[in-house]
Length: 350
Image 1: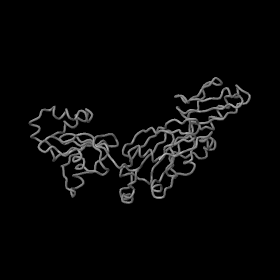
Image 2: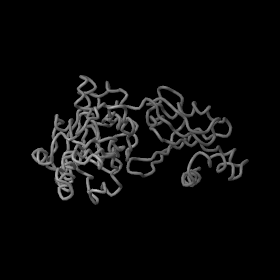
Image 3: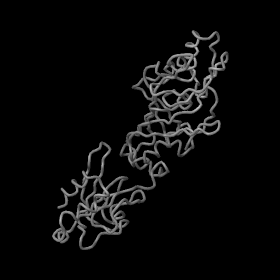
Image 4: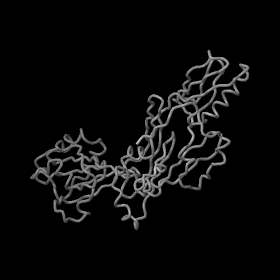
């Protein structure tokens, strides 16, 4: 869901830094999303392409790339640091610098091409981490990614996500200390189409998806929208007919994954002790063992719901162990999982 913005001179220079100071929010305080946050200012950074029009000296007009150190340079001036500034503030800084070079330093500053933005998504999403989102420049319009785009990029919400309490943290211009933070209610967006709760994103934004109160989980059963990934991918390895990476519907169980991999190899598979490997959000490896059970009435603990990125290992039966050497377990797995996982699996193939 990209949000189009007309690309015109000073599109993003809605407020100067002096005006923004009155809106600075204390770091420890959260607020609901409001129009000032939704219609926020754009902060320049490395990779942006600017167009400077010098009215009194058009021969010095042209395009300028913001370099990795956050500066632009010209024959008229040495390096000027513009990274972290709004277009208004950058324009004032350039004009101030040009006073020493030309009589009339008036300029027009335009954002010609916006850089890709890098954001951080943490908390109750399937794949928390850093993501790069592209800003599409087309004709006179910018298509800017929104909060929903970021959530979808991170694999959607987990079932423990609190959709009424998502935190968006944003940097302020470099000459203003602190950051601003707002709470976002995505339920209002899903039920009422309230687009102010789907703000456009800026470089270095951080999205925090908090965990829901267990007692109130039933309130959100209706929220199976596209904010929750409809598909997951898991690895099924070991003694199955077609080991490899399998795509499943969300909320699939161990038995569904084994069947999708062609089912167990009858005499060779150890069906009473399927190993489930899961990387938790804190990066640790969680291991559990489950009997293979195709009955719909089986307990959830015996046939748990799988998560995106899970790995299932169907071990060898005692008969298969006798007839095989150790190479029989290492060879078919090598091309599917990383070596450290092989070590984990072999070490627990009892």
